[in-house]
Amino acid sequence: MSEVWIFLLGAVLGAVGITLFIASRRPDDFYAARSLTIAAPAARLHGLINDLRQMNTWNPYALRDCDGKAHYSGPDRGPGATFHFAGKGGTGSVTVVDSSPTMVGMRLLMTKPFAGDNRVEFTLKPVDDATEVTWAMKGVAGLPGKIFALFVDCERMMARDFDEGLANLKAIAEAP
Image (cartoon, rainbow, N blue to C red; front, side):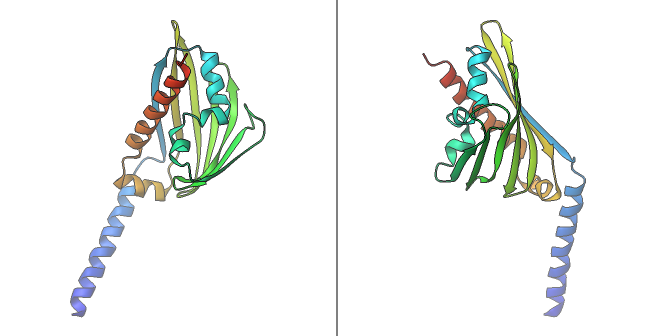
């Protein structure tokens, strides 16, 4: 009987070792981005992004976590505006760090389920009578995130969420 336990322990340790080895070989950083052309001027879209209260009217992460705890601090909009959240989607904060007519840069600081310090950027590029909006996120992938990414396609998950958010933004911005 003890031989079976030794074999099982060896198999489990081997599987853990292989998983850690494969995860450690993954890239140290990540980048995901999605774009959508919206029939609205860049100034209108900038206001819906630069003001985090407005952003959370279309942001799928905030809309999904209605039962979570949240509060705002700092100015109403622009650099220093911060949204703090704690819910089933995670715990952390989003702070506007850069703002210009064609870009809003944010810091996404996560504490749960994984610690992370990521850069989020919205770029606004005028295209004829519309604006191409790009929602991008980049950051450093630590070992827990690399292991998680072996089992969950995080880029596909973010792309789906970014597409949903951009569609929500389009609906609000193009409404009469």
